Image 1 (tube, rainbow, N blue to C red):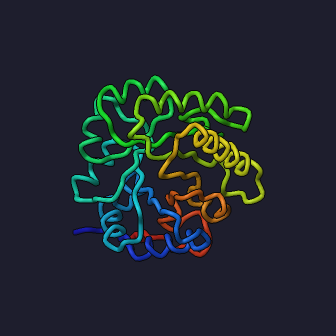
Image 2 (spheres, helix red, strand yellow; image 1 turned 45 degrees about the vertical axis):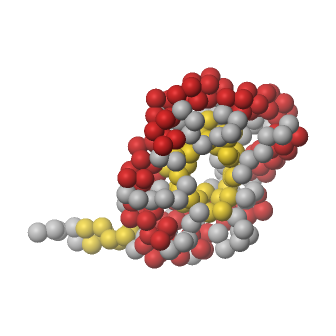
Length: 241
Protein backbone atom coordinates (compact mmCIF):
# COMPACT_ATOMS: atom_id res chain seq x y z
CA UNK A 1 0.00 0.00 0.00
CA UNK A 2 1.29 3.48 -0.91
CA UNK A 3 1.30 5.56 2.28
CA UNK A 4 2.68 8.78 0.82
CA UNK A 5 2.72 10.20 -2.70
CA UNK A 6 3.56 13.39 -4.55
CA UNK A 7 1.12 14.82 -7.08
CA UNK A 8 2.24 17.33 -9.72
CA UNK A 9 -0.25 19.79 -11.19
CA UNK A 10 0.96 20.41 -14.75
CA UNK A 11 -1.67 23.09 -15.34
CA UNK A 12 -0.25 25.02 -12.39
CA UNK A 13 3.17 24.94 -14.08
CA UNK A 14 1.70 26.38 -17.27
CA UNK A 15 -0.15 29.07 -15.28
CA UNK A 16 3.03 29.94 -13.37
CA UNK A 17 4.84 30.35 -16.67
CA UNK A 18 2.20 32.84 -17.83
CA UNK A 19 2.34 34.73 -14.54
CA UNK A 20 6.12 35.04 -14.47
CA UNK A 21 6.34 36.21 -18.09
CA UNK A 22 3.26 38.46 -18.17
CA UNK A 23 5.37 41.64 -18.37
CA UNK A 24 7.71 40.26 -21.02
CA UNK A 25 6.98 41.13 -24.65
CA UNK A 26 5.02 38.52 -26.59
CA UNK A 27 7.81 38.06 -29.14
CA UNK A 28 10.29 36.96 -26.47
CA UNK A 29 11.13 33.24 -26.54
CA UNK A 30 10.38 31.28 -23.37
CA UNK A 31 12.83 28.60 -22.27
CA UNK A 32 11.70 26.27 -19.48
CA UNK A 33 14.45 25.06 -17.19
CA UNK A 34 13.83 21.38 -16.43
CA UNK A 35 17.19 20.47 -14.90
CA UNK A 36 17.42 18.09 -11.93
CA UNK A 37 14.34 16.21 -13.16
CA UNK A 38 12.45 19.53 -13.37
CA UNK A 39 13.42 20.30 -9.77
CA UNK A 40 11.94 16.96 -8.78
CA UNK A 41 8.66 17.44 -10.68
CA UNK A 42 9.45 15.02 -13.51
CA UNK A 43 11.37 16.48 -16.45
CA UNK A 44 9.86 14.27 -19.14
CA UNK A 45 6.23 14.79 -18.11
CA UNK A 46 6.72 18.55 -17.59
CA UNK A 47 8.53 19.01 -20.91
CA UNK A 48 6.08 16.94 -22.94
CA UNK A 49 3.11 18.75 -21.41
CA UNK A 50 4.51 22.23 -22.09
CA UNK A 51 5.50 21.22 -25.61
CA UNK A 52 2.07 19.75 -26.38
CA UNK A 53 0.40 22.86 -24.97
CA UNK A 54 2.60 25.04 -27.21
CA UNK A 55 3.41 27.08 -24.11
CA UNK A 56 7.17 27.10 -24.54
CA UNK A 57 9.87 27.61 -27.17
CA UNK A 58 12.57 25.37 -25.75
CA UNK A 59 14.13 23.78 -22.69
CA UNK A 60 17.30 24.10 -20.65
CA UNK A 61 18.97 21.37 -18.62
CA UNK A 62 22.21 21.01 -16.66
CA UNK A 63 23.76 17.94 -18.27
CA UNK A 64 24.03 16.06 -21.54
CA UNK A 65 22.36 13.05 -19.91
CA UNK A 66 19.30 15.14 -18.98
CA UNK A 67 19.03 16.40 -22.56
CA UNK A 68 19.38 12.89 -23.96
CA UNK A 69 16.58 11.64 -21.72
CA UNK A 70 14.21 14.26 -23.14
CA UNK A 71 15.13 13.33 -26.71
CA UNK A 72 14.66 9.62 -25.94
CA UNK A 73 11.14 10.48 -24.79
CA UNK A 74 10.18 12.30 -28.00
CA UNK A 75 10.66 15.90 -26.82
CA UNK A 76 11.41 17.75 -30.06
CA UNK A 77 11.79 21.43 -29.12
CA UNK A 78 15.30 22.94 -28.80
CA UNK A 79 17.25 21.84 -25.72
CA UNK A 80 20.17 23.81 -24.27
CA UNK A 81 22.67 22.21 -21.89
CA UNK A 82 23.75 24.90 -19.42
CA UNK A 83 26.74 22.95 -18.11
CA UNK A 84 29.74 21.75 -20.08
CA UNK A 85 29.53 18.32 -21.69
CA UNK A 86 32.29 15.79 -22.24
CA UNK A 87 33.80 16.65 -25.65
CA UNK A 88 33.43 12.99 -26.62
CA UNK A 89 29.65 13.55 -26.54
CA UNK A 90 29.79 16.38 -29.09
CA UNK A 91 28.96 14.12 -32.04
CA UNK A 92 26.02 12.57 -30.20
CA UNK A 93 24.78 16.04 -29.25
CA UNK A 94 24.92 16.99 -32.91
CA UNK A 95 22.96 13.88 -33.90
CA UNK A 96 20.30 14.52 -31.25
CA UNK A 97 20.08 18.24 -32.09
CA UNK A 98 21.13 19.22 -28.56
CA UNK A 99 22.60 22.68 -28.12
CA UNK A 100 25.67 22.95 -25.88
CA UNK A 101 27.30 25.79 -23.95
CA UNK A 102 30.83 27.01 -24.63
CA UNK A 103 32.61 29.65 -22.60
CA UNK A 104 36.28 28.80 -22.84
CA UNK A 105 38.60 28.88 -25.84
CA UNK A 106 40.44 25.63 -25.16
CA UNK A 107 37.22 23.81 -24.32
CA UNK A 108 35.61 25.04 -27.54
CA UNK A 109 38.63 23.95 -29.58
CA UNK A 110 38.47 20.45 -28.11
CA UNK A 111 34.68 20.18 -28.29
CA UNK A 112 34.43 21.13 -31.96
CA UNK A 113 37.23 18.69 -32.83
CA UNK A 114 34.87 15.87 -31.82
CA UNK A 115 31.69 17.15 -33.48
CA UNK A 116 29.70 20.17 -34.60
CA UNK A 117 26.72 20.59 -32.26
CA UNK A 118 24.83 23.86 -32.11
CA UNK A 119 26.19 26.06 -29.32
CA UNK A 120 25.46 29.11 -27.22
CA UNK A 121 28.35 31.16 -25.86
CA UNK A 122 28.20 31.45 -22.11
CA UNK A 123 29.40 34.76 -20.64
CA UNK A 124 30.43 35.24 -17.02
CA UNK A 125 29.16 38.71 -16.10
CA UNK A 126 29.20 38.11 -12.36
CA UNK A 127 28.16 34.57 -11.45
CA UNK A 128 31.82 33.46 -11.61
CA UNK A 129 31.05 29.85 -12.48
CA UNK A 130 31.77 29.32 -16.16
CA UNK A 131 31.94 31.43 -19.27
CA UNK A 132 33.89 34.13 -21.07
CA UNK A 133 34.90 36.68 -18.42
CA UNK A 134 33.11 40.03 -18.80
CA UNK A 135 32.20 41.51 -15.40
CA UNK A 136 32.15 45.11 -16.60
CA UNK A 137 32.30 47.13 -19.80
CA UNK A 138 36.08 47.42 -19.48
CA UNK A 139 36.30 43.64 -19.96
CA UNK A 140 34.51 43.69 -23.32
CA UNK A 141 37.68 43.99 -25.42
CA UNK A 142 39.29 40.86 -24.01
CA UNK A 143 35.97 38.99 -23.99
CA UNK A 144 35.52 39.81 -27.67
CA UNK A 145 38.92 38.30 -28.47
CA UNK A 146 37.88 35.05 -26.79
CA UNK A 147 34.54 34.97 -28.59
CA UNK A 148 36.17 35.59 -31.97
CA UNK A 149 38.48 32.64 -31.34
CA UNK A 150 35.60 30.41 -30.21
CA UNK A 151 33.65 31.52 -33.26
CA UNK A 152 36.53 30.47 -35.50
CA UNK A 153 36.16 26.87 -34.29
CA UNK A 154 32.36 26.64 -34.61
CA UNK A 155 31.42 29.50 -36.90
CA UNK A 156 28.32 27.92 -38.42
CA UNK A 157 27.17 26.39 -35.13
CA UNK A 158 27.24 29.36 -32.71
CA UNK A 159 23.54 30.17 -32.41
CA UNK A 160 23.23 32.08 -29.15
CA UNK A 161 24.81 33.95 -26.27
CA UNK A 162 23.75 34.24 -22.63
CA UNK A 163 24.64 35.05 -19.05
CA UNK A 164 23.08 34.42 -15.65
CA UNK A 165 21.99 37.14 -13.22
CA UNK A 166 23.28 36.90 -9.65
CA UNK A 167 20.79 39.05 -7.73
CA UNK A 168 17.74 39.48 -9.95
CA UNK A 169 15.56 38.78 -6.91
CA UNK A 170 16.41 42.29 -5.64
CA UNK A 171 14.79 44.88 -7.97
CA UNK A 172 16.77 47.79 -6.49
CA UNK A 173 20.19 46.18 -6.93
CA UNK A 174 22.57 47.78 -9.46
CA UNK A 175 24.32 44.43 -9.95
CA UNK A 176 21.76 43.22 -12.47
CA UNK A 177 21.97 46.42 -14.49
CA UNK A 178 25.77 46.18 -14.60
CA UNK A 179 25.58 42.55 -15.73
CA UNK A 180 23.06 43.39 -18.43
CA UNK A 181 25.09 46.33 -19.72
CA UNK A 182 28.24 44.19 -19.84
CA UNK A 183 26.52 41.54 -21.95
CA UNK A 184 24.73 44.06 -24.16
CA UNK A 185 27.98 45.93 -24.86
CA UNK A 186 29.70 42.66 -25.72
CA UNK A 187 26.90 41.68 -28.12
CA UNK A 188 27.17 45.09 -29.82
CA UNK A 189 30.91 44.64 -30.34
CA UNK A 190 30.38 41.12 -31.67
CA UNK A 191 27.91 42.41 -34.23
CA UNK A 192 30.42 45.03 -35.37
CA UNK A 193 32.72 42.10 -36.12
CA UNK A 194 30.01 40.30 -38.07
CA UNK A 195 29.17 37.84 -35.29
CA UNK A 196 25.41 37.60 -34.82
CA UNK A 197 23.37 35.45 -32.45
CA UNK A 198 19.89 34.08 -33.10
CA UNK A 199 19.12 33.71 -29.40
CA UNK A 200 20.23 36.14 -26.68
CA UNK A 201 19.19 35.60 -23.07
CA UNK A 202 20.10 36.75 -19.59
CA UNK A 203 16.86 36.85 -17.57
CA UNK A 204 16.20 33.93 -15.25
CA UNK A 205 12.83 33.56 -13.49
CA UNK A 206 13.06 36.62 -11.25
CA UNK A 207 14.92 38.49 -13.96
CA UNK A 208 11.80 38.17 -16.09
CA UNK A 209 9.67 39.36 -13.16
CA UNK A 210 11.80 42.28 -11.97
CA UNK A 211 13.71 43.27 -15.11
CA UNK A 212 11.49 42.43 -18.12
CA UNK A 213 13.16 45.18 -20.18
CA UNK A 214 16.42 43.22 -20.00
CA UNK A 215 14.91 40.17 -21.71
CA UNK A 216 16.83 40.57 -25.01
CA UNK A 217 14.98 37.97 -27.14
CA UNK A 218 14.60 35.02 -24.73
CA UNK A 219 14.08 34.30 -21.03
CA UNK A 220 14.85 31.19 -18.98
CA UNK A 221 12.18 30.30 -16.43
CA UNK A 222 13.30 27.87 -13.72
CA UNK A 223 12.29 27.63 -10.08
CA UNK A 224 9.31 30.00 -10.48
CA UNK A 225 7.85 27.61 -13.03
CA UNK A 226 7.13 25.26 -10.16
CA UNK A 227 5.52 27.88 -7.93
CA UNK A 228 8.35 29.17 -5.76
CA UNK A 229 10.26 32.41 -5.03
CA UNK A 230 7.61 34.83 -6.28
CA UNK A 231 4.12 35.98 -5.34
CA UNK A 232 0.95 34.93 -7.17
CA UNK A 233 2.37 31.52 -8.06
CA UNK A 234 0.93 28.10 -7.28
CA UNK A 235 3.22 25.37 -5.93
CA UNK A 236 2.88 22.57 -8.47
CA UNK A 237 3.68 19.70 -6.12
CA UNK A 238 1.46 18.40 -3.34
CA UNK A 239 2.39 15.63 -0.89
CA UNK A 240 -0.40 13.41 0.37
CA UNK A 241 -0.21 10.84 3.13
